[in-house]
View 1: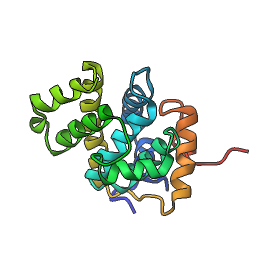
View 2: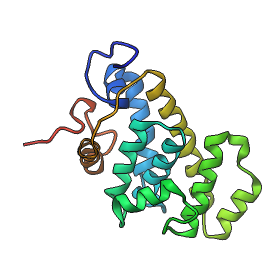
View 3: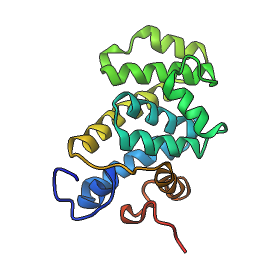
Length: 188
């Protein structure tokens, strides 16, 4: 049960976005740009960064939902996402994604933990300045999203199937086009 009366039974950030549409629209727009706009990083890779940071922050809803979103868009699915969250150093991913996840983990600890060496190492394995920028912003934004979700005591789905239903909607329609009240519902 959330700490405030959101006047809905929607899980996690979905309920908060529906509760306060003015801020919800802005948060959804940021997620849309960071996770779905044109990029040299795939949507699945960007969702994996969000899931990884959310896992480091122990945010059950965001980690579960963005893990599902990443799994639906990455070859390797759930097994790959779980390997990334367990240990990016041993996950079967590119050196570039591994270096970007290192930067994301440093941002999660605090922005000042990102070092020139982290950025240099990412560039050595092919990361562009825009990819580094977007990784830092994804990590920072998900620290905020995670604290928003957990700071208001929202609930998370209990089953992977519920997260997968949310993923189907987000992967197909995105964050901006999705009506928070309908995310995760099966259409007929």
